[in-house]
Image 1: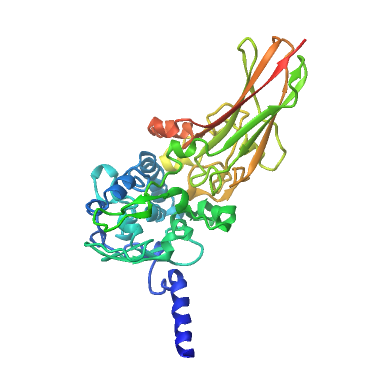
Image 2 (image 1 turned 30 degrees about the vertical axis):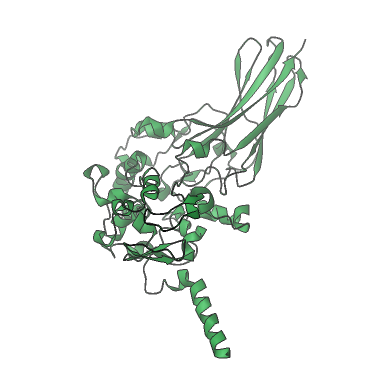
Amino acid sequence: MRLLVFLFLIVSIVFVFMPLASEQGRKGGDAAFGTRKFEDYERPLACRSCHVDIYEQWAQSMMAQAYTHHWDEIEYFELTVPHAQNVPEMAGKEAGCNGCHTPIAFLAGQAVPPRPEEGTRANEGVSCDICHTIVARTGDPSFNYNYVSEPGRTKYGNRAGVESPHHKTQYLEFMRSADFCGTCHNEKSPFGVWVKSTQLEWKEGPYAKQNVPCQVCHMPQAPGRNATTAATEHPDVAQHLFHGAHDPSKVRGSIEMRMHPSYREAEPGDQVVISVQLFNGKCGHMVPSGSAEERQLWLHVTATDSEGRSYHLPVDRKGFEGEEHTITSNESAYQDMAVMVGDPDFEGLPRDALPEGDRIFCLPYFDPQGRRTVAQWNTASLGPDYRIGPRETKIETYTWTVPDDIPLGIVTVRAELKYRRLVKSVADYLKVPADETESILVNDAETWFEVLD
């Protein structure tokens, strides 16, 4: 009896730690480059024959567009590849991008896959058979595509006892964990800097403590059948929506806002302090997260007097080190692009390409020369992390001296929190389609005070 109990405990321990223990003899990260063939993996359309809804959801997501999305293509072929080819210290770094943007091409050994217009299998991006053949990760934490992919007839999922006429299925606890997501949503630059840390941000926050992993928000559950061949309906089928930074519906309302003035009545020449409270009550990671080197989230505050004249209010400084990087400025930046674009006369671009004086919630990235960069692979250091954490409230103040010539009456003060996925000056220079720099209104708030004689 004791022997049976001992054997049961051993088997249980092996099962629990399988995602790490099984990495012995298996390869993940850079070691997995070129270890597979394209034909080892099913095409997504093959999966669609049974998983119609799941396929159509995936096809609309950035998972499917991870290699073909216009900005990703431009950044890769116009900046990353030439940088790696022209700077000896960057040689070979161009292959690593594909470990997450087109894993099949990476595993098949394509350092630089063909451009999307050529219609190769690299265009499949993060396909069904990639995620559903991952069995483990190499090391802890998850980062830099350190997943272990074991393609074959067995597909791994989050439900036990499921049968398929096309393949074998096996339950894998690892797939239900945030560590699974972290293999691509955490990244270290060649300089050892965490340039992507979405899963690590989650791990340090309140949602990890409550066991609410990434999948709860980005793969919400709904009743249904996970395949046309499914014998029964389940109450909790994971929807493969992967809503994130490229989905306006996900971005809007992610930060809640309120504001108020220090006085409801003021005279010309008085100082009125406007306080704005911003609360991240929905996102389990920092906002913005992921590609923080290029994301922009800024707070723009204006006052409008009783005759309709508008006044831009600059944010009050708090005095912390590096704060200048968290207040919008159009000083020259991104000079490291010169070597990437092959233009020795390139002197940089406006840093934020926004009205100056607004608070911008950001994590500045710096190249080896200490200059601002949007190239995560060329990031050697970081500035102050002034983003909005999960369940964090930030308060910004705007001290305004009421103009002497302002007309009497109600002054309306409006705050707008806006977001865009890419710095417009960079996008314009590289001819990125306009939708990448579309400003999305995350939230807004209004308050008022009255000017009396």
